[in-house]
Amino acid sequence: MHSFTGTPISKGLALGKAVFVTCSAPDIPTDKISSDEVERELELLENLLLTTKKDLEEYLSKSEITDGEKDILSTHIEILDDPELQAKIQKKIAGDRLTAAKSIDLVFEEAIEVFRNMANELFAERAADFADVKSRLIWQITGSNGEHLARLDPDSIPIFDQVQPSDISILHQKGIAGFLVENLSYTSHAAILSRAMKLACVANIHDLKQKIAEGDLIMMDGESGLVIQNPDDENLEYFAQKIQIQELIRSKQMRLKNIACETKDKRKIQLSLNIGLPEEITQVAELGSSGVGLFRTEFLLIEKNRLPDEEEQFAIYKKMAEQIAPKTLTIRSFDIGGDKISHLIPSEKEDNPYLGNRGIRLLLSNPSFMRPQIRAILRASAFGRIRLMFPMVIDVDDFLAAKQIVKSCADELYEKGIDYDPDLPLGCMIEIPSAALSSDSLAQHCDFLSIGTNDLVQYTLAVDRNNDKVSRYFIQHHPAVLKLIRSIVIHASKHGTSLSVCGEMASIKEYIPLLIGMGITELSVSPGAYYDIKSVIPNCDERLSMIVKNFDFSTSLPNVDELIYRTLKPYYAKQESIYDPL
Image 1 (cartoon, rainbow, N blue to C red):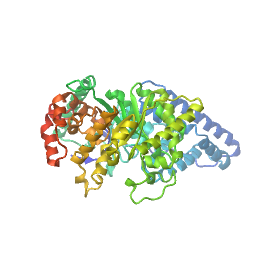
Image 2: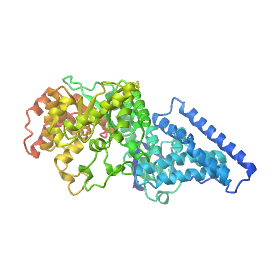
Image 3: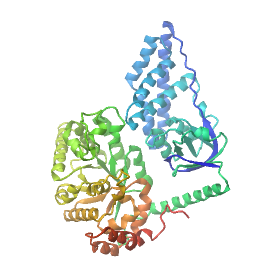
């Protein structure tokens, strides 16, 4: 028995026999074709593209496929429809006298290589889409489609060098519970699809095929990343118990999903989700959340080699808003530094990008970069409930400058007769001490505020939480931070302005009684923490509010520790977490 730990990609448990999946390249004719054969190969290409597109569209129309799979298949159809790509393949056939198969291979490999060589990891992942479409076309034209997966059955644990989104669909159809892969990123389309289809997945175990023999019994846990080769009786018993625990968790989750999200003294708590990819929007319905409290739009910038245009963004925001209507989708404008997208817009190197031209500063200094996103969000607001908020705001002047750009964009749409919500709520993140200290004036002018505790802690305590040497100073419940939060709550209440917490604090159950006791009634959390946080809310009561209201935050950290980890502990430890073992 041996155990290995890899990167957790998709939750779930699986037990089965190891099967190595070798996707050997099909034989592609390399001989030149004659002039008489050109027309035949061009016709073969045309029919192949039409047939492949038709197959994808038919699969796309099936009601049982997930939204994540729909998005990926739609992307593949767009690649097939790309006229520039088609023209290059046709040129290889007619000009270079290559077969359709060889022309497809060369043209797609050129595109794949471009994406693979991009410095940003997520840019490089775009290569997977092209590789998958290329595989579909090559396998079909050579008549060997799907042969590499033919010997798999429901008791198999497939082990891949690399996996394509189309492979995931086939694994799902075969009833396979989980798989291992040598190389896979958490944000790749194959990873997204495995989570959508609830296939356990662990990746990035070095030299995996040298460590495991085909036919070995494999036990894998997609949540922890643990893989056990030929488990003993003790580990098999552990596996059986964990399955029971999962069933218990699912049972508790279903009970929690159906209870009201309110405190013991009947205060309604809005519990929304933080998401970073459009595919995650399905979690709103699956978990029963109040909506999306934070949609990070940066993925639009790090998945393209050009600035996304208005139409691309509009289609994404519109679809998301329609999917969760009438619940609210809160969209945060691009929160990224110029250093991260210098290949997209001119940007000078900065010595300290954390304090540089990022967030709203980048947007205000590059209006042409900001306006397409604003117009897209405005247009999408006609199809669902959308809110727009700005990051890295330091004071009300920042917000009003951004608001003026929104008004200008709205005027453009009005003149063109394009629908939008004229009352689109506008808000800002409170994540800089100056914004917290300016929260009185911000609450007067904003429709809503959202506290980003990660940066608020970092900037208030002057600590880089990613620096191991000083990470001990990153204390989210430091009295200085809590005093700022309390002042924001007071000012938001004074002006009747909606206030939420969307930072990491909102996803840590030990902080929930404290936040609710301070007067917070809106929380936006990571999907994985949703039910654990919801389980604490019904325990909170009027007495809790009195305890926190009477607490003096002008005190020492040990006294705050005493408050959170002793006085308030009964509120979050009153019942077992749904994630606690039996």
